[in-house]
Length: 140
Image (spheres, rainbow, N blue to C red):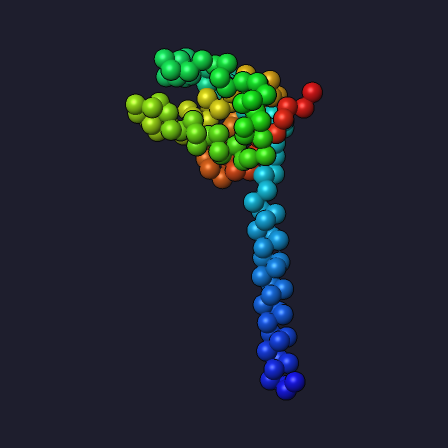
């Protein structure tokens, strides 16, 4: 092996190591920092979500559709943004017609329906905030 070849291998190892650390760091960053069990919405927000749901959703949906083991298991392990994005496709005749915060209020209502704890801060209707919260089974 020549000095030049040796430098090339060392350089490649350095790049490979940097890429490996970047992948580890980005994988860590992609993991939600909080869970729905951490009180990610307020009671007042869920009440607003209840009113919005009653006004805009009950023509097609019953609240029971968004509660129970089947509902939570469908979203378990995913960032809360997935549920938010699904809600944002409604109402069917005018998808995305509510403000992002109103959709977050409806998600808060769903969390309350499933007996997740309320907290001191409102759930924000922003992708970055929603990606940082994972949907998990409710802790007893």
